[in-house]
Image 1 (cartoon, rainbow, N blue to C red):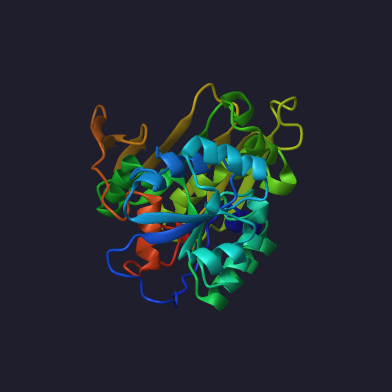
Image 2 (image 1 turned 45 degrees about the vertical axis):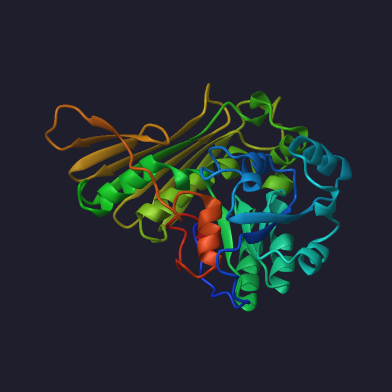
Length: 352
């Protein structure tokens, strides 16, 4: 179970140096999109919490050159909403790459499709960033790793909490020794569930299907805590991973879990990852307990810090993040261009 959960929750990663033509200095990076069923694609198009630097349709550093989506009606709905040209629509990854020449692909399919998309992209020498989780099985994760290494491409996994100033502040406090040695972390990610927050029908369809999404809250939200704890632990692999899942709303999610508690057991630390589709509102928080201090991320910006022997904690704003660590597309471009080289999921995305 340790190996399976570790890769399903995007713990492990290796780095591959990309071999490709040098980009034209100052020119926007050409990117393509594969799939429109994952609702996070909207934030990448128009901007929002998932892309703090802005939507890809309105920024000078990237150029959208193509979209692969088999459902014509779904493409048409996005084209009408965001004024996209019909010429951006391609029937396959190979056709888009051969005609539009993207350097990287943003993937918004069901997680079950990630392996296929990455293997096709790797064969064409194109870098890939997928939405979390990396995949839904250990076998697929190993196949993705092999494809990335053989073709010398980068594969990244985008997780929203990587771009939180509060999480970065907690990380820096820990690494600066302000909290002492890490002994425990409690990481909470969830909301009232996709059925109740009103995600699109195509998004809900795969989020409630174990064959397409692997599971429910366990996969949907558990991956955030796995990624953050791997970062805090400098890539150390846990000795064991255990989990308890529940179906508290079987009428809404008859095939997948909607509540999960994951325990990560390390040599000198422990983490509890709480993932839920049952909470009354959205929560993304992290508690970090050191030997001499405690840090709690209240939201994406604010953090509470309390030291030993202090009567109360102090709440502050996390410092604004700077490129390329402030935005997934900034980070993708920096990795593709060889400006940064990171070998683990520690910060801020998984790089295969």
